[in-house]
Image 1 (cartoon, helix red, strand yellow):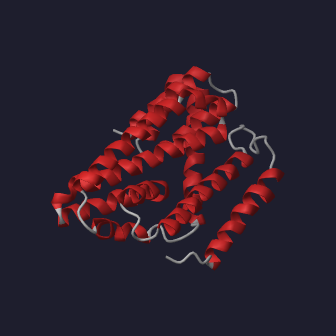
Image 2 (cartoon, rainbow, N blue to C red; image 1 turned 135 degrees about the vertical axis):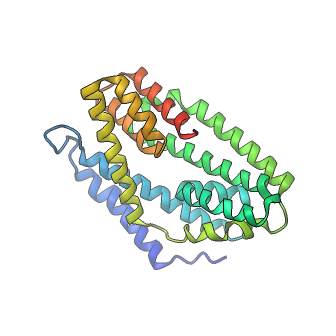
Length: 253
């Protein structure tokens, strides 16, 4: 395993440093549009945090190496692209159906990674909401890790990790893909506008419905939007907690 820092990785570190220490401190806290929907500083903060998560996942892959095993592979893949992992696994299962319990562990770990990301987003937007979610989410993660570890130990065939995850690793090779980060950040912004307008025009019940249906497709964007709405004073704490819980439940449907 080579630990040589590539030019792409150096550029990624530079981009992250510029975002966090050069751009963010200069941006205004206030909304930049007359409707109070878009706060440039919040939007750039989302870009920076998502980029940092992606880069940290890349570093984990580099440090763990190609023989890192199923558990960490699934967890890291969940941070970068759980969708790509879920698209890869069915094809591998068709080739070898006897591995279904083994690859189930990868899916469980990917879901656990998305829950860690939920905590990161809540902490980024409104730390006061963390008290309601840290313990239950950590319990969910611990349960997932426990099941994944059991499946890995009991049903793991020799050399299965390399066989199953060769396609997934291709999606983890870039240290920082700003295009994908920007696309996801724009989706977050769209969901924020949708939740804000439904709450403003139709009331909290409509916002909850928007949260539910939005979370069926993109849970993290909805969690971010709900926390941001509370941070702006546009919703009650109980409503924010309920809507985030709804988003997490909806994402599993």
